[in-house]
Amino acid sequence: MLRGQDPNLSNELGFQTNVNGETAWFHMPWMAYDPTMGREFAHGTTNERTAHLSDFLGSPMPNATPISGMTEACQARFAHGFESWAVGVYNKWGAYALGQAFPEDGAPALVEQNGKTVPAGLPFSEGTLVAKFLTTNATPDCVPYLADSAVWQVNRHQVSSDEEYTCQRGLQTTRLTQVDVAVVDHRSPTRWVYGTFGYSANAPGDTVLERLVPLGLQWGSDPDTFPAVPRADSVPASQSVLNTKIDTYEHWGCAGRLAGPVDNPKSSCVSCHTAAFAAADQTSADTGQDIPPVFGFPGICADGGSPQNAAYFSNYQFPDLYPSGAFPGAIPLDSSLQMAVAFEQHSVFANKGTPNACTDPNQF
Image 1 (cartoon, helix red, strand yellow):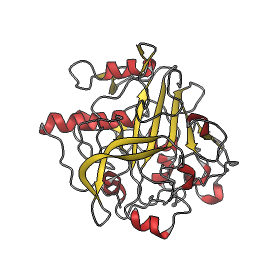
Image 2 (tube, rainbow, N blue to C red):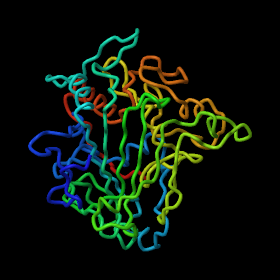
Image 3 (cartoon, rainbow, N blue to C red):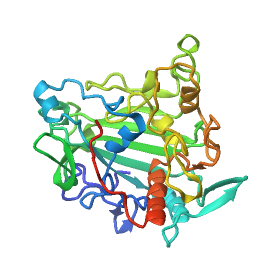
């Protein structure tokens, strides 16, 4: 994955999609259409955790967790939290599926597979590798372990005089804080294995890439572990391996499952991604009504054994429908949340002809 890359991921070079004269990495289409969180021009990042999540979970956002050790001055300066801007890339095996799902006309191509409507090209084949580089606008004076990380200028939301994020964008600093990888592996109960790395200024190494510390691996949602079952019936999570010997604060995911530094601590990598679905008939999705509640729901990681937690923390594979049976028309997307965004934004284009206007990018 790092062949041909700048070991410091400098702002001038960023992550290179062209390696040794060949396109080695590819992007999901339709990620630039939304003006609130859509892809920006400098490094191709998208806003991952803004007001859209407050729509899903209510405000103030239940999963908003300040990075440990923040001073009162930092909390005042970042009263609406740290924005995360991330760019994801697919290798050529993954890109083949994207090219089938989104042919030259740009419209999603759907086929029938075992009686279910699915995107052409799915499932992603073995050999698929997806990587995502996540940056934050947190600063080293607030989060010391971000010192000497890669510093990028991205076209992100500007801040008003009262420290609120606005719809106006401009080139501003972000710092690399997390790198996620995902591969298809038939041995996994979900067909996917996820790995997360966190940047640490205290880690040994002369370059930014060398100071990325492995945080853990996950290949399943641990359906026998709280909150998928009541706490009295729960067994310890066994489908995540966490690196507990690191010297930076990590909140992890729900009940010993894997989640990265800027991820939802009440979810997990696998649980979130496997819930990637699109609304039927190319319509705009109403989360929790047409498609599963990807980013959470009331009682997530709290109400042990509830139907919602049991479904969310289940193991299932493409083209299975969501385990609760509540979304029979939803289109399975083989764990690709970026494809879910692409389907949603294409539906906005197809049905409205214009993007949804940005109104408030603050998530809490």
